Image (cartoon, rainbow, N blue to C red; front, side):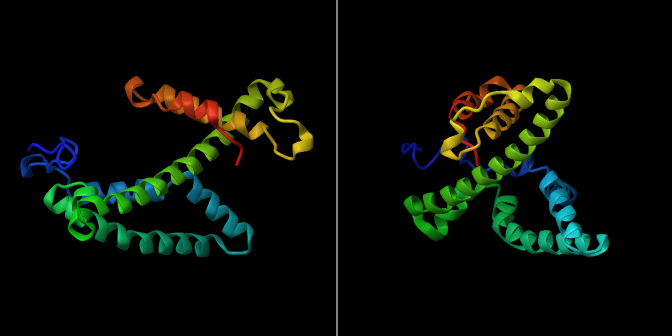
Length: 185
């Protein structure tokens, strides 16, 4: 193939012999995406808002099941034909237009990464604060008169740095610029 914008190893279909996932693999993926700290936080806030524990569980299960339907519809072609979403989107949006849904998915992924990182950073910050009480008294990065709390920036940096420590060096080169440019939410 001569045109590199239309084909790369990342966009190539996976041969049928290398497609080893079964229904159990997909179920495990869905469950692992559903059982995460933000889900626990949602359940506790539902209970705090007046629901019983079983009502909160049913509500979260129903919400995850509703999200599962478009996920299955969206991922079916990839599972059946071994193609990634940008290649599948070319059928509906054309070669250039497929960039739009691919970028929208990327924006959603970045938002979810931000939520997970913020929550993880807060948890790690609380743990470190127990071991190093001086963290509570670090100076803010911005003047208080500006009205922007800058202490949350430390939380994000702690979480991003811990993520960088758990991943291979070549796949986390994003961590340093992200940590330097982090803004409080």
